Image (cartoon, rainbow, N blue to C red; front, side, top):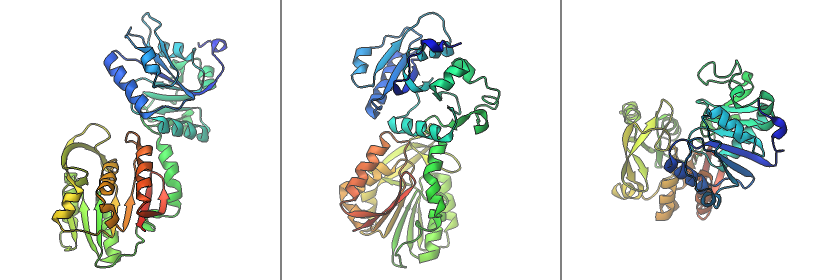
Length: 374
């Protein structure tokens, strides 16, 4: 059992308790990445060093929030190490991180806010390597190992539901966070209203970046009968688009994506989404420098550009702004994604630059937004 009387009263928002693992170089690289992404000042970080690794605590403390390194020695399980670490923490919330998963301050804050709003006491990732719990719930359960012994938790390989007293979260961000973001968008049926309502004509040129199955392109064409260029780098999706619009002389399928440079990258994808930033790449795809494509095809005006390229939007938008071509895009419909490092900062910077030439006509953060030329 955890000695709750020995616990320090909560004095910071969250205590991150990180397992050091067995490779000091990997640990150093991971902590350096955390410092680059930034952690809130009212957090503390406790590294549980059960393998006797050499950790330069003073150097790391310069760029990270209050840092402690706990090296209890002996042959202790990870659960025992986490329990010992919890005794020296001061956080209202405890975040147990058992592997080097990626997150930043925005992910942490939204995960905590979502947990608090849910009325539950604990959030657990599908593979249990990211566990967020209220301090008093943790203490009342008698320690870390007891958190996962609930009969409704862990019985189905981590597919948790709310009836078990916890909320399922991914290893980087709670699915419920995105669901909350999407709720107001869905309430106005944005996919069938705002995303299709533009001042277009048969002479208009539309770009569909991240065309997937081509449904948005199909809806736009049905409404305006304009010329549409569909960009889809994933082979299976691209071939389906080409087949779907084979008899349509105004819809063109391009088997590559647009970016800030010509490059080949590995992409991971499933039935609904693809990204070069998530998971282990399984398919090599081609990206073409946008400004070169536009020049080769003598395209000097785009009436509507839709961008949903699963993390690639930051490089592309920056490229369009840097080259000045953004001034030739009448409407930019874009979806930003938050799983990219420093996503919120990069999004804000792009928005700041877009304001020089465009104005937002609708804006649902990390869902959809549209920028119209001034």
